[in-house]
Image 1 (spheres, rainbow, N blue to C red):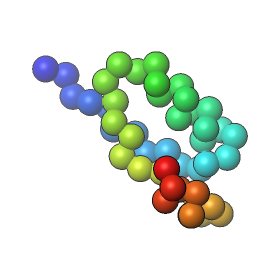
Image 2 (cartoon, rainbow, N blue to C red):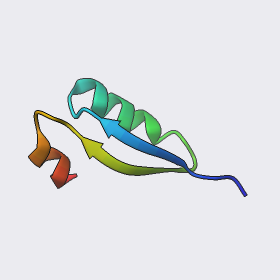
Image 3 (cartoon, one colour):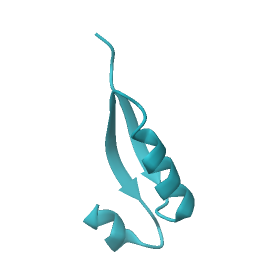
Image 4 (cartoon, helix red, strand yellow):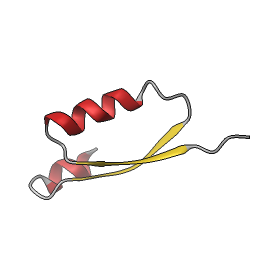
Length: 46
């Protein structure tokens, strides 16, 4: 049994969104959180 890849997305700007979309190509992953120092309320909404 393989372990899930655990991902923390840092930054919710253009590159953070790009990386988050790229993770959808990984078969077994878990997003454990989102952080952004300039947009904390946006991170909470995700």
